[in-house]
Image 1 (cartoon, rainbow, N blue to C red):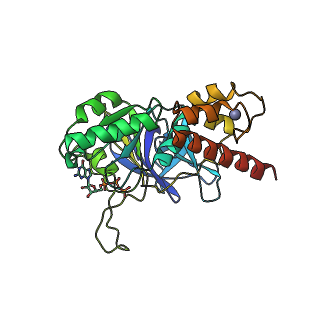
Image 2: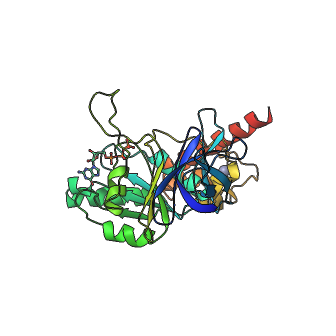
Image 3: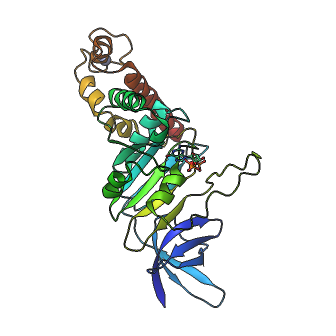
Length: 299
Ligand SMILES: Nc1nc2c(ncn2[C@@H]2O[C@H](COP(=O)(O)OP(=O)(O)OP(=O)(O)O)[C@@H](O)[C@H]2O)c(=O)[nH]1
Ligand SMILES: [Zn+2]
């Protein structure tokens, strides 16, 4: 008999699948057919040699980042919201924030920033950090609080509702802690001790979905230093910078490279402070990366 389930972990030649009551089953992958990823809905079947994945249902959406060669690699599927976690430490990386904005936009998944560890901040520091984020990042959705103290958790709980949210961001910002705070009592089974570091620090090495049946599903993902986007198109980068897209049409020359040409609307916006120089620089850099990626694919 075929049964339906959701992939909570996909690794090697098998995946872990949660059934309707939340029980986990280890299912062998078929040699043919695509590899399911975290969040996929699948049909599976018990057989004498163990359970087997029979089919992967069509995806509502999929998050694909670039692997070490810049080729797209799916991270998770059927996601309702991406939550980019940042914290006072490790220091937030504004370019990484812009990279995730492009990624979420390309997958058509709304992005919310969660500033974590606010228990470590004085009110004035918290305020300053949030002010800078909103100045640097045009119309970024932002919530803040603490996985440790529980501050702000109600707001993010409401936002996620009974949907599926993926937590992404640098290592050590508190993605696993937030996952545990939002789905209490669940065995994350992440946080294997990082023996190599010898410091006993817990670090997530695999993307894993945890849920309460009927409640939210949270996908905890390994920390990243950067995020490759060269498999995306310049148009997909542009879509994440609507304020810049609007300006590029106002340059004097239609083929303006925004590189010192007379009558460049971007240069004007930078000089007048209408747009932060950093935002324009990030846009230019990501456009360049995706243009190079296109050239690589053609050659
Ligand atoms: N003060 C404070 N510490 C926190 C908070 N959330 C997490 N931490 C601590 O930050 C450290 C890293 O937390 P994790 O949840 O493992 O971070 P992560 O983002 O999952 O890290 P990776 O798995 O390496 O990607 C741990 O020591 C946590 O106890 C918080 O809200 N406040
Ligand atoms: Zn221009």
